[in-house]
Length: 168
Image 1 (cartoon, helix red, strand yellow):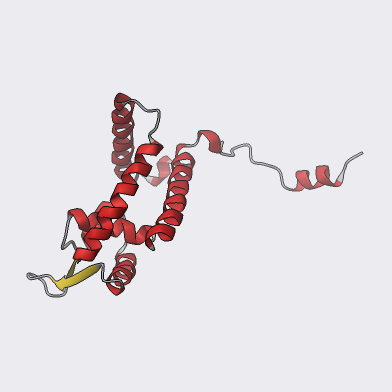
Image 2: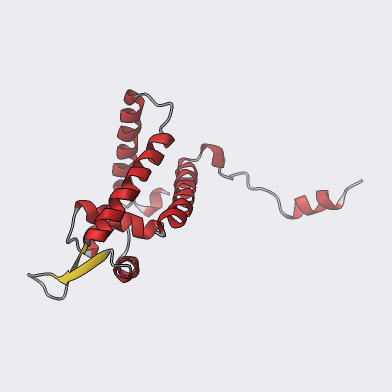
């Protein structure tokens, strides 16, 4: 005798072409990234009152002061509107400042203030320890290989836009 669950399963069958998420690299990378971002965001907000967007921008500005929004997009993939919102948040706290570009006054450059650099340095110690923990159990050689593989994956992303749509 067919149960209600059997009948409903027939109404909503699974696809024969369903992707096995346990072996699908984009899903795996996304899971790792999302969990890292979530736990980092929660930790940084509680301890430093800084979200992940602010932290990512601070990391770039600590190494490249007076960057423009286009540079932020190139390095960390944050679009101009997100950069603007994040920068306003940092400016309100006295952690960042802006100036007009001396060549093109329509463009703005941003940098961390002394207080921003102090907070960056405090968070950076914690961030490095958390990243080291993520790599616990990896030998130096394995870490080097992992970063080499990840760099290759990143390079391969550029080629995805060059593949004609009809290929898929």
